[in-house]
Length: 265
Image 1 (cartoon, rainbow, N blue to C red):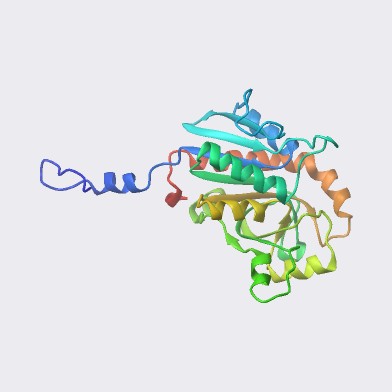
Image 2: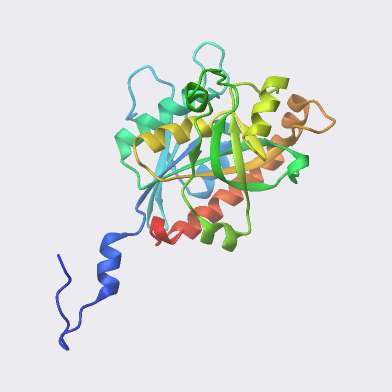
């Protein structure tokens, strides 16, 4: 329906545009590790959900609250019931993303977390990237067309204004379920033209693309994959400091989002 005319007979085109592209109201931040989540829980002054929205028996944790007019939800997959470690990886990430979208109907998903970076592509410890594309590097199916399905390339939400304003780096993200990198993984990551690698992003991207929810991937570099130090050692050494950097970066992203529509990002 067209907007009603003003007294002079003209119409208010801005009102019509705002109706078509309303400001973002509800966001969900998917984050794999409690260490990564807690700085943001504190920054946004969120409260842990006492009555879980999720199926009984799942360890998934939701923190929620209102921040600058936004309904902010952080979903953390919780601890493995048997081993007590963070439920990292693609299976947990895809499950919680699906459950969060079904339960909360968000306007935007932010997948935030730490990642390995490649010095050959210019990555340094502490760099924050907004991933333009996400793909898998460990789903090798050497059959025509199935090979493309295995890579599972998805594009993140276009955010040129956000990246420019906040001065983040942009690059492609490759996802696999192992912290280390085999020669086969390396070949696939090179084929994906990735700057950073993680264990969740492409799984989140698969679900958000399936359910047509815009997604932003914000990753902070903890280790240099093609460097001299063992990945696990460097990851643990830098995790605390880089988590602080990640928290500040995601807070800036949410500050920027407040009051804007997806098309303005």
